[in-house]
Each structure stands twice: as structure tokens, then as C-alpha cells.
Amino acid sequence: MKKILFVEDDHAIALALTYSLEEEGYEVVHTSGVEEALEALRSSFDLVLLDLGLGERSGYEICRALSGSDIPIMILSAMDDEANIVMGLDLGAVDYVTKPFRLQELLSRIRGILRRREKKEEGPIYRLGKIQLDAAKARVSVDHREVFLSALEYRLLLLLMQHPGQVLSREQIIERLWDVDGQFINDNTLSVYIKRIREKVEDVDGSLIRTVRGLGYCAGE
Ligand code: CA
Image 1: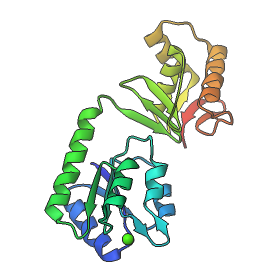
Image 2 (image 1 turned 135 degrees about the vertical axis):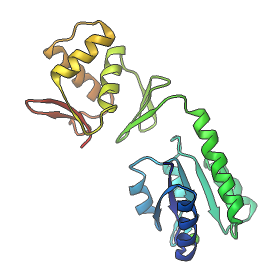
Image 3 (image 1 turned 120 degrees about the vertical axis):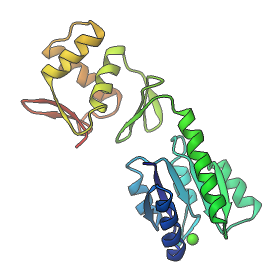
Image 4 (image 1 turned 90 degrees about the vertical axis):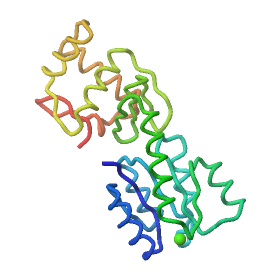
């Protein structure tokens, strides 16, 4: 199910449009402020539908926070002057719809954005906190900055990120990496690899790639 973050402080619009989006089969998370939205964005979304005037704050803050990420933003705003539209698009929004909007047209535009995004994504993208791993491109980034891992480090990180929240025993990990890579890893070298990965992805304290004492490792909670 596609997941949409809908940031809107007008409760009537929020209620009505959330209902329509859910009718269309989307999972909708609605927030009415900037802080709440940024908090929600710790988990992944397929689209952000964004109002601009959010009380004292501006939806542009969310555009800025998402710059460099691959989540498409559609702005939905009563501000219909060219300056705002240009600013919104310059800040990375893929579409800008002005209020009052036509519901069917809005839904059609959303379908279009999601379709285009699906085509672009050739492989799964895994996220763990600030770490993003694009399996199609074998690319790892931290806070949108690319980091370079050795082939084995990459495979180890991929393995952990493919099983979020699941404790993988040292034996399981060694077995899996042995299989795919044919390189020799033992218990000690595994610890060394984990340490190197943590340094590279800026997780030196092991809060993302956790050590589960006596068992193994776990990506995330
Ligand atoms: Ca508003």
C-alpha cells in the first residue's frame, strides 16, 4: 500500500482529503505542523502532500529537510502567485496544485507521480535511520552523502538492513557472507567489519547497527 504523508493545518480540508485518499487505497498519515511532519518523516513515505502556510511555520521547511531525498513532494497551497510556485518547484517539489483544487484532478496527479516513481525505482531501497541503501545501484548514503564500502562491508550492511529489527546471530551472518562472497570470515574478522561499517556510516556508538550481546547483530530496534 502506498503511503502518503499529508501535512495540512486546515482541519476541514485534512479530514475530507484524507478520506478521499484512503478511499483511493492509500495509507495516509496526517500531521498539521512542521515538527510533527519531520517526526513522521523518520519512517518512509511514497509521497508528501504539503500545505505551505502552517501557522507560524512554512511547508518550505519540510521541502528543505527533504532536499536530496527521493520522496516526491506535491505542494497543495492557497498561495497561487508565481513567486511561491517557482520557489516550491525550485525547492524540489515535483508538482504544485493550488487551492481550491479539483479532487479528481488532484488524485490523477498523485497517481502519475507515484507511477513515475515506481518506474524509476529498479530495486528496493532500505533505510535505517540516516542510512540509505539503494540495492539497485549498490549505493549507500548517510544523510544523503554517499559513503564507500568494500564489497564485503556492503554485503554485510545489506544483510542487516534486509532484516530490520531482527537479531542475526554471528553464525548466520558468517554463513551468509561465506556463501555469497567466498571470502573467509571468522568471528574476529566479523567484529572488525562491523566496526569499520559503523565508522563509515557514522554509527560509532552502535545505535543503528546494534550489538546484541551473546547473540549477534541487529539493524535498528
Ligand atoms: Ca494552511
